[in-house]
Image 1 (cartoon, rainbow, N blue to C red):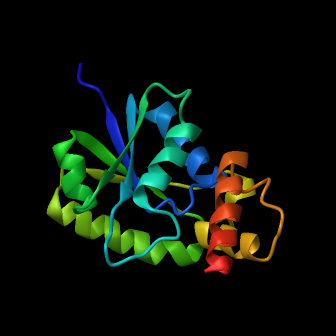
Image 2 (cartoon, helix red, strand yellow):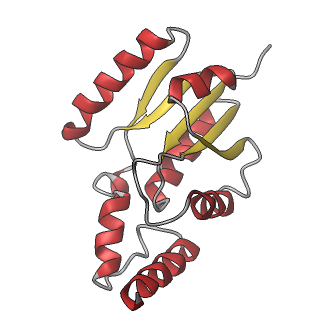
Image 3 (cartoon, rainbow, N blue to C red):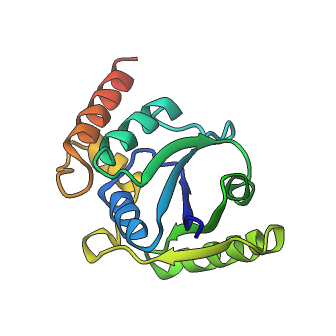
Length: 165
């Protein structure tokens, strides 16, 4: 029997506890989860792709069936190349639905062999996003419920360096 592999693509800038929640839950549904950081040259992130990979690898270090990598192609093509049968997407609020539905339909047209699985976050993470985390951090707010301590330290240092430049 072949492994049931899922791809969880995203920018993860920075990775949050909400991302980890979805990774853990996808890990219960699939034999292997590939977390893939998008290396999109049109979308400048606060963290480099390498920094995001390091943070994610640290977050999932105790999860042997989760691998972390990067990609610079269409998600559905990356999924096909790695034998994934599903693409994991987070669906937090109704405003996410239209975008995710459009993406899922287009991915299905490109590769009918890969399904999109939308997971709703656990309640504490419904309104959590990387953008919100960066906003809170920029004003010195508490991030304990939003990101791992290592991510918080890196984020605060990154913002400190940006203010010095």
